[in-house]
Figure 1 (cartoon, one colour):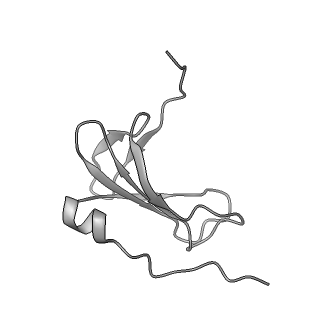
Figure 2: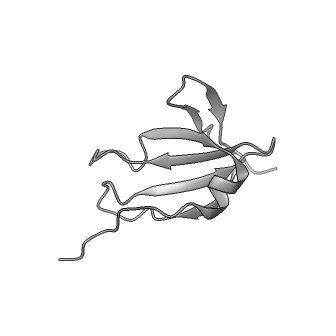
Figure 3: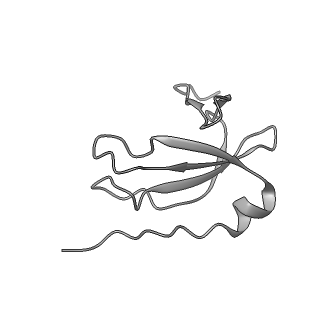
Length: 84
């Protein structure tokens, strides 16, 4: 079995979740980090989580929110990376 580092997060409502084995459904995790970064995950337990960046240049994702399946599968991120 592959060794993984744990990916533990806390949601905006204070819920602690383990995304270590979650499947990334979609993302825009491009460097440099900023508000264009997001990811949609589905945990093995069927919980959908949206990770976003609030302008933190040091972390790819810094805020997490639980979504229902409909919101997760139809999510459209409002921000895009601007190329120089």
